[in-house]
Length: 121
Image (tube, rainbow, N blue to C red; front, side, top):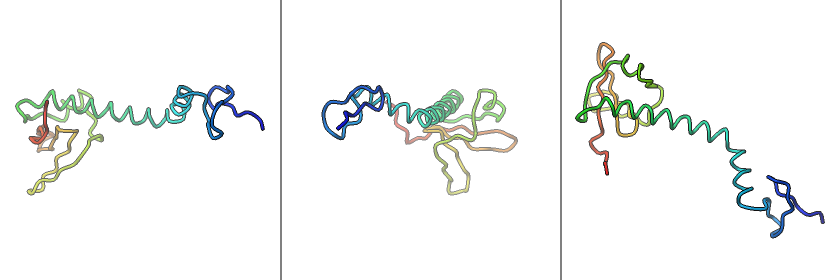
């Protein structure tokens, strides 16, 4: 029976018959290559969400503040990325990026709020 070779480096595999890699290093390298596209996509989305959160945090003083759409856009805010939507009993819709939310008001103004339930350590 021919000896199996590592899927990553091609070295002979010693050990169990169902083994595919010669070491954990090769297994990790192989899987990282396979998942690189998905990992990059998720990493880019998470980076954009963190940027949105930081922008809202910088603007939100004393748990509440108003700003304009242009101010948010100038800082690089992406209105397409948020983590949750909450609708109040009065029908107002808040878009949240983690613990910071924004509500569109009249004349391109936005109310920025911090979730009172968010815990800070």
